[in-house]
Image 1 (cartoon, rainbow, N blue to C red):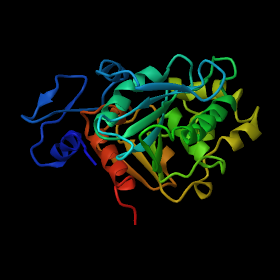
Image 2: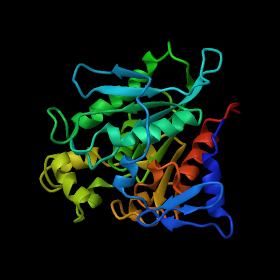
Image 3: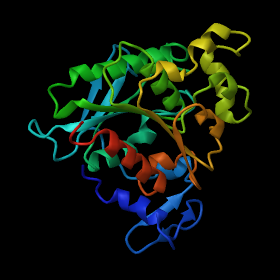
Length: 291
């Protein structure tokens, strides 16, 4: 697997004497790479990106589509392992797929094919609960239609960030999704009942997504809970110690890694140690030769 030098950022950060700064301040130059931590949403949207190689509809509605990014070296004789990505944004229509374009671009540059899903969200006709989840399940299932592209459908990891992590993990609990090698949650929301009790903006959006509070629609909240015993065996959560949007308690009960100094959006930024760790996990799950 070609990691295109991005793993170097993670290794530098772990080494002694590394020069690491918060992205809100000046970016440190190590001589070989720039390392940033605890980046903002604005830092993510300012990153370079390229359009998907293909935009494919998985349903009849305008927001039921995915972007397929392919690495340059992928071919019929050398298909690329596939990363299915579900973007976050508090389940809200205000935050669409575009903020994840830099991540998809970086992953493709590193040798992965990326099937990144757009879906209807709160504020969109048909979005919210359960429509958003139904879209994500349909989008994941659509990989069965990617057989004409240089994608290795025998090596597939599902991942999602924040609210997208919640939907990805929920989708993985359904028997009708294709076989997955692993599911990786990036700052994923796992307990929506607990999460909706919080007072940050994203936590307040949970009730709108669900159509009411847990007291008003208890059955819906029960259906929207992640259950570890319903998930595939290979599920791993990555969480940043400085995450101010999704509490660290959301990773409790699952195999997980808390990365020091990392914030909520670091997993989407190719110059962070968090991204390097994410890449390492992907490489582990999508290795060239399976046992």
